[in-house]
Amino acid sequence: MAVVVANDVRVFHDIAGIYKFLGSDHPLLGVSSRSLARLACEVYAGNGIATYINEPDNDDALMTTPMLSYLINELKAIGGINLSASHNPPDDNGVKVYDQFGSQPVAPQDQHLSDAMAAVRDVRMMDFEKARQAGMIRGVPAEYHEKYLKTYKTMFGDLYQPQPNDPPIVYTPLCGCGLTNAGTILTRLGFHFQVPPGQGPDGTFNAIPLKAPNPEVPQSTKPAKVFADEIGSSIVLCSDPDADRVGLEVKLEDGTWYHFDGDQIAAVLTYYLMLDPEGPRMRGLVIETLVTTKLLGAIVARAENSWIVDDLLVGFKYLSDVLKQLDDNGHYKAIKCSSEDLVIATEESHGIAVIPTIRDKDSAPACMYLAALQQRLHHGGSTLLDYYAKILEEVGSYDTMPRSIMMTGVDGMLKKDQIMNSIREKPFEAIGGQRVHKVVDYWDQDMFGPFLSETEKLPRNVVQFFLDSYVVTIRPSGTEPKLKLYCQLLPHEDTPTGKGRELLRKLREKTEVFAKAFYNDLLNRIELSLDEAALLLPDIIDLDNKIHFQEHTLIELKQALEAGRFNTLDSLLAWLETEVAPMTPGANPLPAIKAPIAYVTAQWAGKLENVSLLTELQSWAAQ
Image (tube, rainbow, N blue to C red):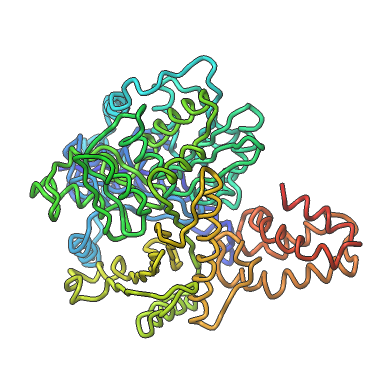
């Protein structure tokens, strides 16, 4: 009986100064994911359970989330854990728990686990070295990593043969573990890729803007895009610290970069795998959550002998649970197929899986397919953005816009509950000028059945609103202190039409306007609202800081410019950096405010046309 223990790169340094009152010798300083993983092995050994951990004698060893899932199945382990906080800030840490199938458990199994942990009264441990000598702590045999890589290399086949004249690919693990999965598979397939300086494994994430190693955050890859410009690359691929999520940035002809969101990546990969005449032309099962783009369903509808599951709660464990049910029952609801029929399982938060033996997200196959498609398109004089736009032309005018309202502390928790309670007690009758036709509340036990356990209440804390051309969803995050809202635009008589990037631009503009309106509709439930500039701040910034920026920072900035308070741009930026420092504890906050500063300076241009610093500030914000 054994489990697999993984860890990412995190090291606690208290960059936000939360525990500075304890001085320089408090016990949390220097605690790493690796040290927590070793501690977990000692606890398992003390309770008679053997563990597999990568390179037990190497204090810097790492293991990705997808490799953990793969090993659980390969080693016939009874489960596993990963010490990681995914894409969260560097001082965050936690544990991901996996069952014997290599997936995270759903209700009520997760409740049983929670109850067992709560019942512990005596912690038994065995010293790490003694456990090693007793065979209770074991290294992972190297051949399993080779088998993992071979699985994807075989799947890839001869889809693309890298050419000597291929432009370089930039891949960054965002200071995490990804070089061992995505990086290695790109190498094995012959792709020429380079990693930006300083972005190898580093638990402080020092090279990542805002210390936000998250593929969903466009600012996180800014240094990688600068590096790509320097070496002549037109693509940046990335993964988060535990290497399960994938990110994509593409350079356009005018030198600007386009950030692909998770829904767009999912659509590109699903179309490539199923409908692209030069792709693998796969047929079978596609799985997505209820907040992932409905474009996937339209793609699957064009592929014969294929099925889609698109009504799942948010979280990759629910996608994996479909595969479990297929293995156990031979069907999932009315769909009769095997888990081996999986084409892709995907979610809007930049996660995909393409083989049933890895039951969590994996950035490696996404990177290999996107790299192949990018190089093919490059030689044809096109881009991945053009490719996506053609999918919209062919399949339908869909778009999505996820937003988040970050709310921290006890007051933030109360506000989140207040908003959710409000929309249940008095649901919206109209959103963004469109009438609401139907409201679906996943806490409705008459419709969705009784709660299987207390642990099922959070993932089912979801309310959906159906309009003529939108499906709008609101839910609290299960891993971060925020509300998440999803605006899904569907083809309708009032949906924009057109060709290529112009169609994409029209759709995105429409969805952005709608999403901002819905964002404020929700804030109005707690008697708050944000103006256009504050809405342009990244959603990793909490609501209190956004309100301070709106009601204090921008007003003082305008007054300072009018009064000539600063003589140089550097002195102005130094003041701004200090003023907004609480937005991004421990990280330079200036990248986070460029978009709103660009907006307000354009608005002020007429009234402050004689202020020389205004032009310089505009130029800085546009960079």
